[in-house]
Amino acid sequence: MNRLQTQGVHHITLNGADRQTSIDFWEGVLGMPFVFEQPNLDAPEEGHLYFDPGDGRLITIFTNENRRADPTPVADAIGSVHHLAFAVSQAMYSQVVARLDTRGIRHSGEVDRGFMNSIYFREPLGQLIELASYRFVPPEGYTHTDVLAEAFRIRVAAGDDSIGDSHLADAIEALVHRRWARMKPND
Image (cartoon, rainbow, N blue to C red; front, side, top):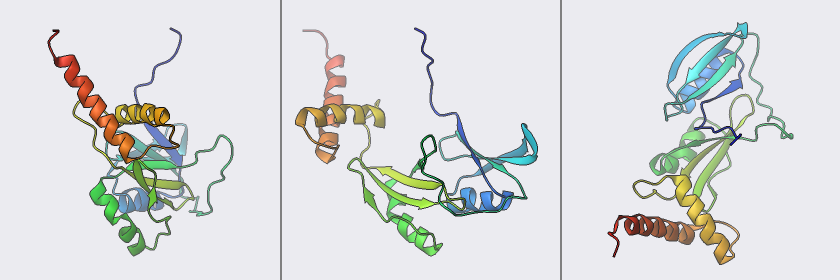
């Protein structure tokens, strides 16, 4: 095989404004712990801040004290990043609207995506942020991706347009059944 094989997202780096704007948003609003900082090794006049989005990976921000926050939405152009989505628990999701409202942050309100719930808003530099929460828990030994791939097969076979609760429930049942079938001794 000549393909490369990735093993997950290592980190995402965004161009930020000044240091404090970045810390106020990524740690202060989103609650991502500020892990460390160092100079941007490719541009020493810039800082490089590292935050933990909750899974032990990193979101990093290049900062420059001469840049100021500009909340103008980032252009929706070919090749650009449309949005960044971060996972939140259902318990947190149920509080997101109120917490954003308390901070005066404009948002989309709750958006039903069939297999997940989402809320969208812009960070201080105009990048669209999504807080998303799956509406299911995968069975032990499976991932959210496993369930969604199985739900997709079920949805297509049913001729439905998008994944809904019934597809998720049937997918979870199929995965659990498949696991138990593998565990049965051969008859």
